[in-house]
Length: 549
Ligand code: 9MR
Ligand code: ZN
Image (cartoon, rainbow, N blue to C red):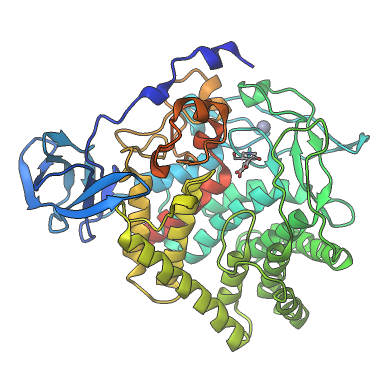
């Protein structure tokens, strides 16, 4: 590994210069506006950037908050609705500058969406679209099957998964599905998206997701199964992607990858039909071949890394939720009773029916069923609606009792906790638009506020957004390009109380409260990596918020 990587002064010693924590993007004029003050004080002021006092109020003590270890006081400035740029002042300390404006999340929405362009593999990034972060073509050579090195395959394209340059089918299918559902539910948000990428006569987001779908389809073998991943044998050193010239291998088929491929291709086929008939047909054929493979392989075929390979495993304990999701999407696409029967049968197995992550995908299946244009079994639809509404109620209660306003329990601060934060906000978005519970919007916002700076470290977990933001993610190009400012729009994994890498163990004291177990440092892969499926829930939530302005 690059020597420089170890010799650099750890930026994790960078502390927030602010003592009061607010959403650094800001607040919509009519929304509830609260900042967190983690020290005793009675009054606060909100000042315009020019220094004039625009609002003053009394704080309310919320009490001791266990996940942060802070004694929390709330500064509520909801009545201040005038557009502008502000900061809060109390007890001799200040917050970062934030905005109040109707489209205050538009810019961060554009950034987290554009992040996918920066993660493209195999095409090179044009200066016209990528600005200073342009770079050459990567991973363009023919791959070889891990288990039969003489067999060569073209699996170029898709997005790099994360800080590493691997490409994994389950992770890619999940991220693409989040983006496709964001588009399906909140199309208006993408209508006006000005983000500049190569367009294909379809909305911006669909052009971007198409890039991943083309790759996903290449990962299908001749029998319909999906290879689990395409990566080098070992993680690349901290070099630019085009300088990673090791052989790419394609690893064996797994039943999770095959089911997820079927699901996402079926979902996509319905969406792209309006713009590109050929592409939609190819997606449908891929999905059909994958479900046929599933019918012929009812046993679980998992994945563990073979000896000699250390890239991501993405193993799962079972494929129950994956199969359910696949049949649900096939039914939504075709309306065929045979798929309805299969999805009902798949529910004989136990799995969480509201889960939205890359491992458990039951929530995506339930969402598919609820949005399906074909006849529904009332009882089943009710079951899914009830599951979502119970989940939302449970999360609301947790959020109401938490100092920083999120439904995150201590144990939720694990690897990639910002995915947990944003998938909870996804549940609230669905509670609002699917179940008609409009009180959910405020809860979704609270989770976004936490991501964007209303947290005990006073940091925005999105690169390029906010006055004090993460800038040194465990993301190879961010280190190797030599550019001080990180590519914008990347959501960092976030606090992880389990401190699962040597750097985290070395710099974070053991008894640190879960919400403070974070360091903005390239070296820490368990705290500060980025991934395509940590960004995608944020895109979903922001699309929901931007759509309803
Ligand atoms: O998010 C994954 C985490 O739960 C695992 O413990 C960890 C170790 O296997 O891997 C994480 O996933 C990584 C994947 O394996 C490779 N790409 C980056 C992912 C995020 O760190
Ligand atoms: Zn690449």
